[in-house]
Image 1 (cartoon, rainbow, N blue to C red):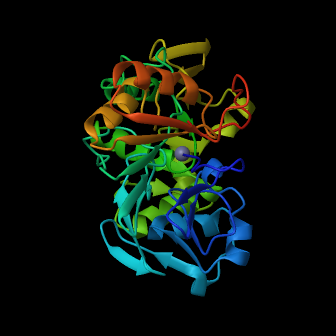
Image 2 (cartoon, rainbow, N blue to C red; image 1 turned 180 degrees about the horizontal axis):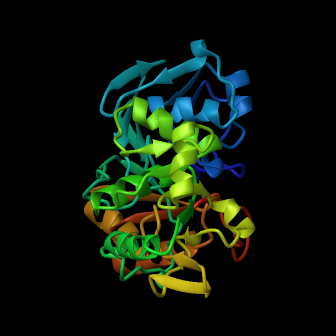
Length: 340
Ligand SMILES: [Zn+2]
């Protein structure tokens, strides 16, 4: 069952392309990370609608994608609409702000694509379509984060400690940054937050949709400059900025690829934290085991571990039919850097 194209589009029903381009009328966007907005300009040019949550579609504008208003179709979670005889509905995915899973009902067959997710069965609803396309970023049996339930608390404790000595910088991908802001507030970090550029704009967008991050200031304002002078704050930056870090802060880079232990100090003022927005191997299996779906399609475009996950499911759940799509050519190599 080849539902993922060689260029990364997930094909659901007759008319939907999700997270990639396939010259179909409707483009779905699960979330605004770069490996899920592939060729979106082509979809905008050729398609009728780009579909996603309001936050996702507005964040795309901040990230530089131009979508005419007439082609935007934003849906709230759970709301079903019919388009050219097929029904589409978004379900919440716990990954970044605005993330959604897509459900399509076409004739008598139902399809779903999870997009990126974590916490299945808790903050990510487990779907039960006839055919399920699932993400497998951490699809290898070795990729378990034994500390995943404690990491939020541990990170907050570390940040609190380091704030005593001076300002702290946190590096993560767009959307994940705002999730981390909420986590730190939940665990009692009350220092002001500083954000600039697109991080600032996406934070403002999320605030306008009801997210409460406490005090977040731009360094371009008088209040922001005062906070920076007082030397007690947490600044949030895009993950790619980590390599340009300086001695001014204590730096935490949040990475899903830090799997063996929760923290790794890489110099006296920098630490990599095993904090991910993705399911690990166990959580991915949990989704599959707890869905009634018999046909599982593993996204082999965005993961190098689709083949090993498929082999594991075949051994352990012989009743499920498993496919890797697109078809693996040889030992998969991770060609694109995915968000973590
Ligand atoms: Zn993502």
